[in-house]
Image (cartoon, rainbow, N blue to C red; front, top):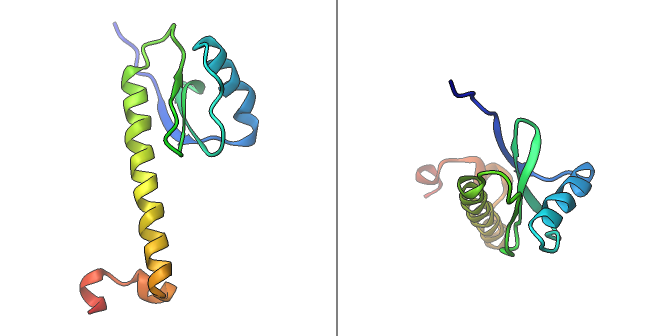
Length: 106
């Protein structure tokens, strides 16, 4: 019988630093710097990836390939969101106007 594991993809917090360094050490790689996404399984960080596009680190003793793929997908999404917000700011749209659906802005 298999058990269902809880998987969470999120931005790291300051108190995650030691756990991310531990995963990096297990992977024999430097710990990611800057804003980092982490993959947790049942509350344990098993993979991490910097949002700037640097390489991920993952626990080599756990099956993490699918988690790393999720981290990569979430990082792509976060970078796209950041670019969209920056473009809207450059366009000078007010926060109230940005809240309207695009179809109503015309």
